[in-house]
Image (cartoon, rainbow, N blue to C red; front, top):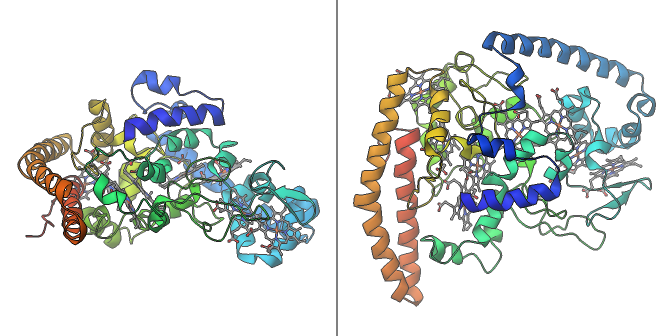
Length: 420
Ligand code: HEC
Ligand code: HEC
Ligand code: HEC
Ligand code: HEC
Ligand code: HEC
Ligand code: HEC
Ligand code: HEC
Ligand code: HEC
């Protein structure tokens, strides 16, 4: 699935923006970036604390300007929006005031303005053409690195992946049951295709929605708001496990439960009081964290040679979510990326032992348990019809989820939460 996603995305990206992935592809690793000018950990921490100071100064300056009570003068075009929205949507306004965007002078117009020809562009307050929903294309104006990584991630393609699943995928019989209504039931997490009404505003059947692979009226895929909730755009909030658990939880999605019962989560809740540091910038050290969160292992630039990435797959050699758990290409580099996160807190031989045992157990489990059962189920399903087929599909779906739980547990839990 992921190979296809990457390939497809390149096409979409070149249409959307003019920057190139060539450098990253040629290196064969995503651990390269524009941040390489920052050299040592000390430098990074210093830069961070200077940033924090500047941030507070800027916040005060904004408060001063608000006291002037003349937003039109202080905030340019955005003052026009603020004039009404300070009262119309006071919480949105207030969150924006506290956001890094307000500090940087990025306002309502910068995100919501929309060329008149766009499918969801409407004339608002008789002056500006705006879009209600702000898509990855809009954010791309200013956040190129994040869009590059995000566009090739599984997240951006969470809906398309279901729609385009091939019939020879072992999961097809389960997934096909939901195809008729366009996977509407799955939209909360996988995303929906957003339609527009007669006034060209997002229609009530499809929006609000912040599912990972939402397909937008401007044809971009995904939504940054699945993790950057609200107008604060707080990194601290995005880094909290709760942000991921919104979707990565429940019977079919065992990684949430596994993490929450792991030593890592327990330490995070007890010693770190369940909070990641509210530090601007890209980099957190292991000792700042006590124990890792989802975003720390899967996204943060913690670890030698790593940088932040919005493509979670860049540290994952396997696709453990898929029944056959295939190894993806370039496995050595990807595993090393993850190991270097562990090395923030664990010794090298600890990490080596951990992964070699997990890899061995995975192979054994797939061969002895998953492969034979998959074959039996698929054979059964190819002949059954009616109620019997329905019943078998239920059992099959449960089996798929349990097998996934076992695999995830090998890499993120390790305390035997597999039921007898
Ligand atoms: C004259 C007052 C006024 C001004 C000026 C104004 N708005 Fe609004 N806006 C409103 C009101 C009232 C609503 C809620 C009613 C509605 O949703 O139609 C609203 C709704 C919105 C929505 C949500 C629309 C939806 O489909 O849910 C967005 C987004 C928005 N405004 C952005 C802006 C931006 C950006 C600006 C500046 C370019 C702006 N507004 C200027 C009064 C205003
Ligand atoms: C950094 C970009 C950004 C800025 C700046 C921004 N917005 Fe938004 N706004 C968004 C995103 C993202 C959404 C979520 C829409 C979606 O589903 O994609 C949104 C949604 C909205 C909505 C509809 C949702 C609701 O809860 O009613 C309103 C109204 C709105 N914004 C008003 C404003 C106003 C007023 C300002 C300026 C004070 C502003 N926005 C500044 C990105 C931005
Ligand atoms: C007009 C340019 C512009 C647009 C459009 C824009 N941003 Fe930003 N964004 C900025 C700037 C500038 C900063 C402040 C960077 C800093 O302080 O280092 C920022 C900061 C952020 C941060 C916090 C980074 C930090 O270090 O604290 C997040 C998260 C973010 N933006 C997400 C988004 C998302 C999501 C969208 C689209 C919905 C968006 N931005 C649209 C310019 C923009
Ligand atoms: C609570 C949020 C949520 C809902 C609702 C949801 N999904 Fe998912 N789905 C996810 C997440 C998160 C992943 C990736 C992580 C994983 O597979 O454990 C995923 C992955 C998948 C996968 C690939 C992995 C696997 O288990 O085979 C399939 C297939 C899938 N979903 C089908 C569906 C279908 C069909 C529906 C609707 C009937 C649906 N999902 C509803 C969150 C959700
Ligand atoms: C799966 C959740 C998720 C989605 C979706 C997401 N982000 Fe983020 N984002 C995060 C997390 C977590 C961080 C903080 C990473 C860290 O420093 O630990 C972050 C950080 C950022 C930053 C700060 C710089 C950096 O790279 O860390 C920017 C800017 C940003 N995101 C923009 C975006 C934009 C634009 C989109 C949509 C294209 C987006 N994000 C989609 C979770 C997400
Ligand atoms: C709005 C729902 C949603 C949120 C929030 C969310 N995810 Fe996901 N995530 C998904 C879905 C759906 C998939 C499956 C996508 C697919 O298979 O195409 C997925 C896939 C993944 C994968 C598998 C790798 C891949 O590229 O397919 C990882 C790892 C992951 N998410 C980590 C995270 C982390 C870490 C966070 C929090 C910072 C997070 N997710 C937040 C819905 C979500
Ligand atoms: C200690 C680091 C760590 C933490 C914390 C962590 N993960 Fe993982 N995660 C991993 C490792 C290691 C793998 C397996 C990598 C491999 O071999 O492919 C993995 C695999 C996954 C996968 C399967 C992806 C795929 O396609 O194979 C998903 C989904 C996922 N993690 C989501 C999450 C979520 C959501 C959280 C938080 C609730 C979380 N992880 C917390 C390290 C971590
Ligand atoms: C931010 C620090 C941090 C990071 C990063 C981290 N861990 Fe941990 N981990 C801990 C702490 C602290 C403990 C508890 C140590 C103990 O009880 O001996 C722990 C416990 C564990 C345990 C359980 C040990 C036991 O005694 O049961 C395993 C296994 C583990 N980590 C694996 C990993 C792997 C694999 C990675 C990388 C994918 C990783 N950790 C990343 C801090 C971290």
